[in-house]
Image (cartoon, rainbow, N blue to C red):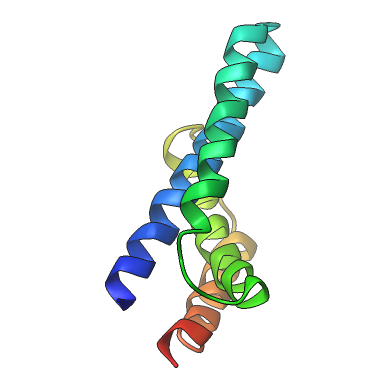
Length: 105
């Protein structure tokens, strides 16, 4: 159950971050079709993340850490952004927070 939950969170985060990136590309390129594709992906993320059977506050509380980590990875490897020590400290904070999460209880 725990591994399935983690995989769902990772998949949902990839969908959400990818969709945000696509909407961003559509807005900057003035393409309504690209924006609509991103919106459809955002809707899909909502369905995927809610397949986990947790209370809503616990669900989104844990998911936020996954979203933050995936967004940092997208920024680094997809958008080639540079990171400072401040950014890397935030990754440590998310890791520590994930290890004290309600999914494991």
